[in-house]
Amino acid sequence: MTDWLSPEEWTAVRLSLKVAFVAMAASLVPGIAMAMLLERGRFWGRQALDVVVHLPLVLPPVVVGWSLLIGFGRRGPIGSFLAEQFGIVLSFRWTGAALACAIMGFPLLVRAIRLSIASVDRKLEDAAGTLGAHPIWVFAVVTLPLIIPGIIAGMVLSFAKAMGEFGATITFVSNIPGETQTIPSAIYAYTQVPGGESGAMRLTLVSIVISIAALWMSEWLARRARLRVHA
Image (cartoon, rainbow, N blue to C red; front, side):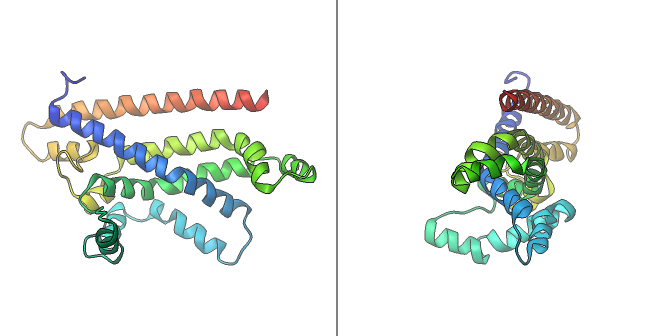
């Protein structure tokens, strides 16, 4: 692949994989917690929280990117605080791209896990509780193994969304080769120059291969998880 792709294209592929993986990994624990809260929680404002969590699904990605730039930019309230206190800069960095991708993919992750939680037989959890198990232990031993297929599905959806995200990332972190230029941004850059069709086609094919591999891996992992649960 290194011979088929140019060094710049290979850099975009590696950066896309890194951004997508970091976005997915950073969203996993908050996504499980949010799914449990929305599905099992009974509190005032739950519907409003549900709307906020799923808002990135309906908002234009450019709006999300612009909001991140306002809040997490160098002059934004959160961005200036992180830069001054911890030396963390997100705007126009690959970490900012990971943040944008995580936010855009978070609703898909939460929704998949939440559907899996809804299908869990509460009698199994109640039985463990009546035997004296702590709620955290019940979740770790009973609930978590049962929702693993949903977690895997949510992770794949989050990863795929991060791999294909364009509007939010290019608005928040721009299109800097070697720093923030992911595969979608590189394809867009190729379409803006004469003779860039071949480069755009190569990166498109790479995206298709990565997506197919991710789907195959998710099905394999989900199948193994279901077999372990049934066993």
